[in-house]
Amino acid sequence: MSHTLGIRQVQKQKTRQALLDAALGLLEEQSLSSLGLREVTRAVGVAPTAFYRHFRSTADLGVALVEEALGSLHPMIRQTVSPADSDQRIARAVQLIAHHVDAYPAHVRFLARERHGGVQPVREAIREQLARFAEEVKAELAKDPESGGWHDDDLLMLAHLYVDQMLVTASLFLEAQEASAEERERVTQLATRQMRLISVGRRHWLG
Amino acid sequence: MSHTLGIRQVQKQKTRQALLDAALGLLEEQSLSSLGLREVTRAVGVAPTAFYRHFRSTADLGVALVEEALGSLHPMIRQTVSPADSDQRIARAVQLIAHHVDAYPAHVRFLARERHGGVQPVREAIREQLARFAEEVKAELAKDPESGGWHDDDLLMLAHLYVDQMLVTASLFLEAQEASAEERERVTQLATRQMRLISVGRRHWLG
DNA sequence: TCATCCAGTTAACAACTGTTCTCCGTAATT
DNA sequence: AATTACGGAGAACAGTTGTTAACTGGATGA
Image (cartoon, rainbow over all chains, first blue to last red; front, side, top):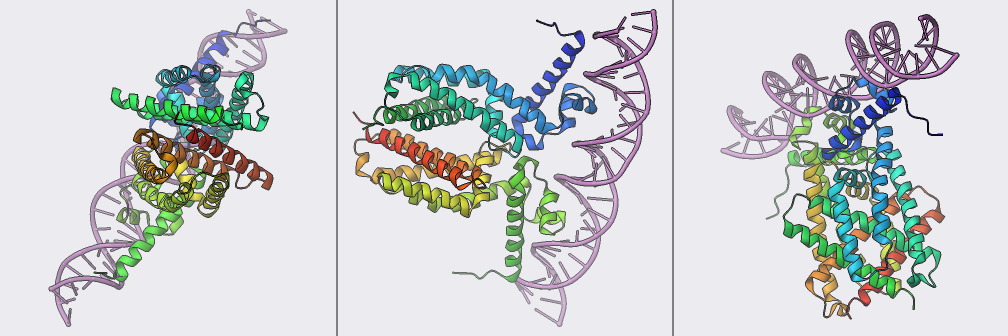
């Protein structure tokens, strides 16, 4: 069943990953729509034409990056929403987001930047994946006894609100990454209270 | 006091505005970081070198576009937040946002795209202006009797939440601009209920 | 062992980019 | 009426871009 990859396919995947990594690095100070194919291959140390062995275009590479970036986000979101919303749990969730931004800053930057960016297929890929995430969050919320009597539509509405709020918070942490410890603490306080307000709204939604 | 502009300065401002308009149009399907100086001048029908009479670079042009785009957003946000949050008021606010997106789609797209985009000075300009907006919203919220007993920090927190939620909603309407009437109605319902949940949270924030 | 495959290379193409310098015509100033 | 100020045009610069074509050499499968 487990067919060991030949040394050839291993090498191919290795350079493919190198292209993805290099692109992610270059995207720190520009958008995908201005990312050049040659720019990426030059950073990897490979001929420009080699690019075509892996991707049709930079937009195609962008779609691949969406998978990678949201793959790393996946477990984080799960952990964040799963427990009920006590104040302690919220504080922990915010810390989880902060930690994720520290661990994968380039992924977070890429998603925040290209979610509304200039490359349509990439926008669509992000939108699609985030919708799947919202569905997942909704399923998690449905387990909670607090969700008794909630309509499906309202659960999905809340799930989207959570997902958007997480991205906003992650983006805030990203901007404050090189800032002072006090500034980062300010962001933490802000995000925590916003999450708390949403929780209060959730608690009093019915009746 | 009112010094009438000479026919020369009038012409200059006219071509300057033409450059801004052309750029805004070209930015429908790309990001600012990939917008070329020649591309813009070609669209206006002017020599490439004329660009330098008005802007130092495309990033400089971007900052000018921030002023313009947020200028049009300014009265909209005011109207949206001013009244207390009855359900009817919320529905009206969402309609206001939808109307603004229809009236200035390019402005909304530009802000959503470049808020996290690849050009640092533009990001900073947007962040700065949005912070000023949040301050203004906070002042508006403070007038409301419902804000009695609220800390300044919490008021600002809520103001930011509102501003972000408005941008998210505007961006949703923008994506659904060419979609069916049912899809647009779905977006309206979603945005309305999210605003409502935030209002519920606001109402029960204290105690 | 031998023929095939295929990731990566080299070379060349026309088209495009931002920027500088020099010049022009005319509105503005004196 | 004479002079200056200045928005814009024109040409040229070196450097970049995406894409095609033909080629190489080592892993792969018969």
